[in-house]
Length: 588
Image 1 (cartoon, rainbow, N blue to C red):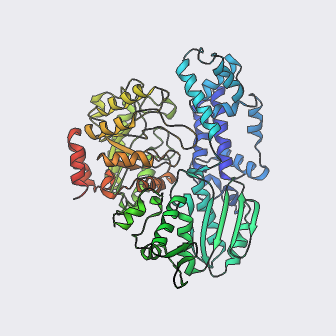
Image 2: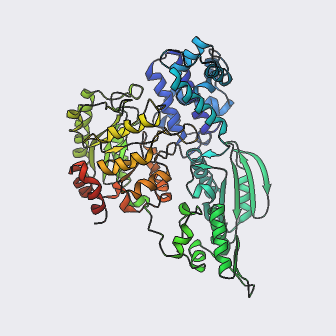
Image 3: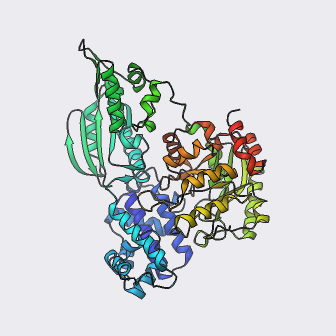
């Protein structure tokens, strides 16, 4: 079993245990193990093969470690198999429908006899689901929409799964093949698309056959589609296709560009070449009059040969970027190195895995100037949300750690639930003592457009809500965004001085690129935050930056590119003055 399969097994165990009414501590242990495993940079099977002790991984204890070893060795887990016998065969599929937690699924099973998706659809069709107490017609309609959404999903893989697979693949090839000079992903992965069709790798190496042979011989290769002198294609056990091309250095730029632009972008480039009496293909540019082929070791010189600014991969969408490049209007997009602080992080005080001190030290090691500790508010019971009394102790520890650790500024914060009526989890007298307040929706996602829109805007009108977290609540490829008037919300954000978060968790990527672009146009400050629940997840900033770059965001559009002094100046202003002040501070 690979990491993704092991993590999925632990998530399923947690759901079944919650359905049984098992202790919360046990359920969270499996959930945390699953989250940790999903983000590991190395396959567990490789670690076990190298005789590494899995208990050195935070959140992996003796019992979990033994279960991992059993799954790697036997491709199964007796504990899980025995647990599943206590439930109908299709119940896990029902539990994957967004909006149906384990306790609700148990009610559907016991009260309506629902044991699979067709049975669930039948209860929607005959009205029995809507008549179940505490559910109702609106919930039934939302569940029906989620069923239809899942049926319509293509075989594309969310970037949250594809990127770690690609990272491990490149790392393994580089380790096995010292002759590799350059190896870069292309395609939708390089453009930071939300979902990935397959993984394209473009490589240069002194010994191409060594690299191609290494790919097809990897233990996680399920099937070899093709294996030639310059290209190999395989299917991995993860269910994704990998196409590897190894080329001469002089062809690298043209081939990488060819595999990095989407179809429409590449058509526009070919049109531009034709206008110059040139022909463009994956090997270079040909002068139509002389027949001379120009080769390009990098993409920059290729774009320049066409009279264009270099166009970053994230912008290669065929929607105006070529015209902008021709007019020298491609901006200097925000980069990971521009981010000075992380404004959304969780510790083991709520549903994070690692202690607060460890999170702070890890952020400091990454060179950031400031960090907001934003453990969940009391309304998130399943996330071990903080009561007012626990919040007070949490704040005291944040201030103490800032003194003890030094070299990084810490903000006392919270990720606070926006309730169904737009009211907030904490009273104003509590919120005014915090440095940074995130308002987020975690429940009641099936509300109609008008209700949801007013719910969010009501929270924005609170003078203490600094930012709205993961606005649409979506999970890429799993849960649709809430229905709301996003234009009205973006305008209210600018009017009230409320920032909007680009949540960098690759499962969320929320705001999405089009939403971030519209908010940017209206002058809304955008915060790129990791929403990290583990130390490893602090590395997810790159995903949020990818979204921001696709939205044509420059550093001055992103709130947490401000140095701490300027950020503090922003926070000390009344919210009504923040939007205008941010535009000034970000350009100073």
